[in-house]
Image 1 (tube, rainbow, N blue to C red):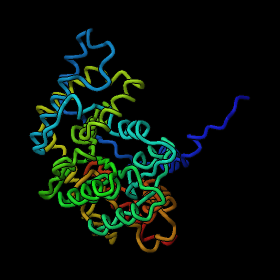
Image 2: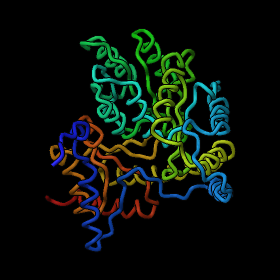
Image 3: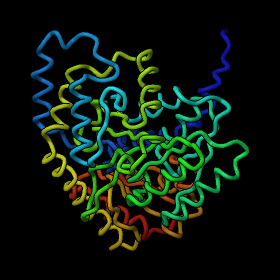
Image 4: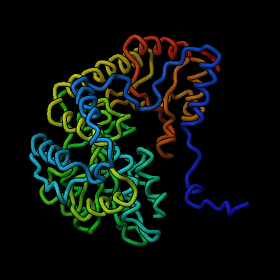
Length: 395
C-alpha cells in the first residue's frame, strides 16, 4: 500500500455542507419537496446576448485550441474599460490584470503563489471557505479576525491582530459585500484599511464578487478606488453572480502588479486558460450587458424582500441586506444552543427547507444560517409557511 500521508488534504475539515446535501438527497428520494436556499448557485439563465456570442464563437474551429492563461488581450482590455467606467480606476492591462477561472480558483492560486509555511494571513470570519482554506492549502498559518458590525471596530481588531502577532502577517483577505454575512462597507473603510496595510507593509486581498448585487441605492465600492491602493492591494471579481454565469467559470484579478504577475506565473504552469469562446462571451457581458445586470439585481431584491418580510412576519427577526444574494439569519433563541448544523437539519426534517449552516463559514458563524436567494417568490412563500409551522412545534 502506498504512503497515505496526504498532509494537505488532512488539513481540511469535513465539508459541513455535504451533510446538508446528503439530507436533502434522502428527503427528495422519499418524494419530499425540499425548498433549497443552500448553495449560492444562481437559478436564472445567462442573458441571451452572452449565450448567443458563445454559440457564434464556438462555431469557429480556431477557437477550439488552447487559449491564453492570462486572458485574451481583448478581454483584459474590456476589464480595463469596466474598471474605468465603473470606478474611475485606470489599470495597465498587461501588468495589472489577469483572468481567472472564477474568483475561487484565482484566490486559491494566489495563495499558492505567494505564501509559505512561515507566513501568517489574517482573514475575516465568518467568510467564504476558500478565503481561509486557500491559506491552509498553501501551507501558511491562518488567523481569523471576527467581523464586527461597526467598521472601525473591525479595523481596530485587524490592527490589534497585526501588533500582537509573533511574526508580522503577510496579508489580509477581506470580502465586501460579504459572503455569508452580507455586511457592506463604505469607501472610508477601504481608505483606512489601505493605510493600515501601508503602515505595516502588508498585502490586502479583496474579493468583490457581489459588486453588482446591491439594493436600496447602495453602491459597493472598490478598494482600487483608494489612491495608492495598487501599491499593496489586489481585487478579485467574478462574472458568476452579476451575469448569471456561475458554471462558465470566468473572473479576474486586478491591482498590484507584483501580486498579479505572481498569480499569472503560477497559472501559466497550471492551466491553459478558460475556453476561448467563454472568454469572448465574457467580453460581450462586460461591454454590453449593464441592463441585464440591473435586471438580475432587481430579481434578487424582490426575493430578499419576500424572504425577509416573511421571516419577520412569523417572528424570526432578520435584517434586510444592502447587497449580495444572501440573507444571514441568527438562529431563533429557543434553538440557539443547538448550533447551526443541527438547526439546519431540523429545518430540512420539519419545514422541508434547506439552508447553509453558518459554521461552514467558520466558528464565528455557528449562531447563524445563510439563505441563498435562489428560489422564486412563490417558493419563498411556501418556505415561510413551512418554517412557521416548524417554529410553532414542540421539539
